[in-house]
Image 1: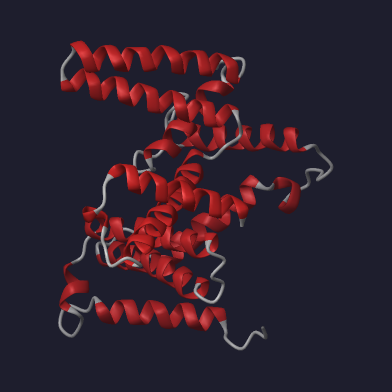
Image 2: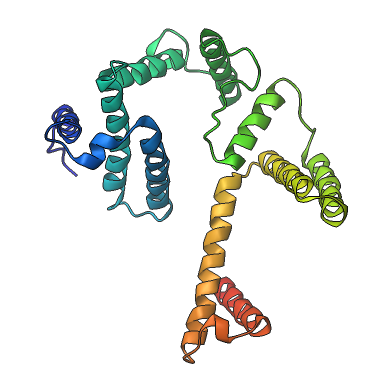
Length: 269
């Protein structure tokens, strides 16, 4: 696709539109009312929609989804500008400076001739310097609280592993899963709801650790499991609809049979 638009001009146009939407006298009432806190959930939602388009390989939708995500940055920057905190140029400058600082082998005089393992070590050393500049002293400091819980669990575990706090291999994690499962059953049978929730959380945390040891992204694995469940349950609904029925007019045994048929059809396909 040929380049027909000027990126700088389009960014300037977007910044102008956002400023107009936030104008106290002539702007949009909804946009004017928004704050950092009220916009943040939309930012997360738009990021997920970008990922969804990529997972579906909906390349015709991706420019629009990326534009929606860009709007979130512009929106937050406009709120900050109005508060006298920073502006969009400061955001752009911050990421430009960070990318240059983190890639001395591209923008500096370091050699690019290094292994992937050495590059990871160098990257972590650079990030450690950045964390020190932010007064982040603890190993786990700086792991964002707003991350999806499974993703944050893996990041926390990776940080701990860098200083040697880790199981040697997946077998040890599997043994821990058995232990946590037994504790969950004990909590279910003999303890209260708070203890049950705690033990369930422990089991989920160890499952995330197993994913890390197996080089699996647990968020992606669960999303794919969700998609598989959706497909197969929709097959159940379609089969019942062919007889003029709905799931509530069926029973578990029949739906289990239809589920197995959907599963066999997927594997055969």
